[in-house]
Image: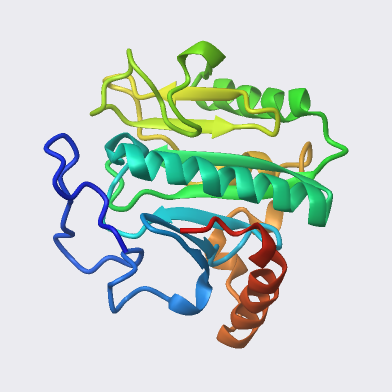
Length: 236
């Protein structure tokens, strides 16, 4: 497997200062959760999933944000996102919402959560915008011509600023970029919105720790998705 950032001055490979739960080579990683492995990225079933087939897209190596991905990894990321969108639509009849919370994150994670296709995208966007305004974290639209790659914020946002970026089923995006002096963006914000009454109505599943299941159940869920997702996997 190629290592993201090797030989590229702009995106040097980062090494964890302490054991990381998400580096694929780490002894701490729970490999039974892995759904698919690419060259620079992999897909894993979310521990404490909000809904069934809620997954994460993560870099194989220790990279903290999409802003620090190599161009090759960004390209692969888009391929995994497109494959998941197609899978959820064709197999489950559902739409995909993806988001990344990047606030001094140790290891990049893009949350990928399927929701009912009967919910209009504009309603989902309104739910994120409303919750952001009520929480003191307003969102800006990311205009299509400025997009560099899916779920990657672009200039003029500084590479060093924290951000929360969400992408909807139609490809549109909204971002909140950290403003000096404001509180840190809520850890469970994305789950709070999608688990709200307006979207999935799962208030008891907002906190992932309250949603953990046994190793046996996790393994069965992952094996089921591996089999179903197989025809949609990104080829190396």
